[in-house]
Image 1 (cartoon, helix red, strand yellow):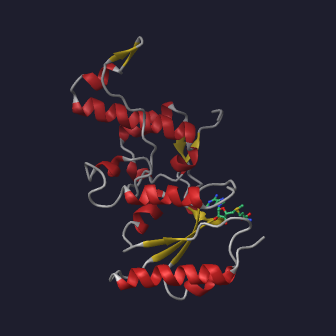
Image 2 (cartoon, rainbow, N blue to C red; image 1 turned 30 degrees about the vertical axis):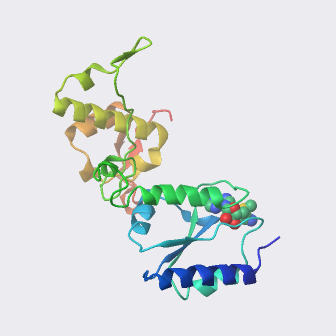
Length: 219
Ligand SMILES: C[S@@+](CC[C@H](N)C(=O)[O-])C[C@H]1O[C@@H](n2cnc3c(N)ncnc32)[C@H](O)[C@@H]1O
């Protein structure tokens, strides 16, 4: 069963008319679909710069293609997938995109800078996952916060965080490590990568692959 053109056309026209009446500039249309481009932090940042967003969460087999083609003549359209699986409907995908975009808007986070340290923060040459985080109390059910985090030594803490990020990224998302620009890594990063069994990939550069697992290192 495919969702029909008419109700979608009427709904979108009404939402657009409302938006333009209140003086908004051109929105972007977000079409959640498993066949869309992957929704990433980079895309969230890009969408957070649009004046407003309209979403078309569907059900059944999706929406008659002519709806997307029609509105693509009037505004930018982003067909996005939130992962390699199929949901029954697009509502959860809309929530995911909304959450990721909204927290990037000015005034939403207490500290506007904090999203720059997040996993996948774009702009960095190395897109690493964030390592584990801790807060008070220093001991809970016999489990201690790592000593270094209580040392007050900012340099050592930063190094520990970076090493944990490298460990977690190599373990959970080796594809991200493969693509990291070598210029993103200092001597200590390289030492840690070597301990973790990673080495520069001399043949990969033309394919955007800069690192590989050293021979004999198991996944
Ligand atoms: C059952 S799905 C349709 C699946 C479609 N027949 C296909 O195989 O690509 C119904 C709706 O759920 C939403 N949806 C399902 N999986 C999604 C995903 N991974 N990302 C974004 N939206 C998704 C979309 O709005 C989609 O049109």
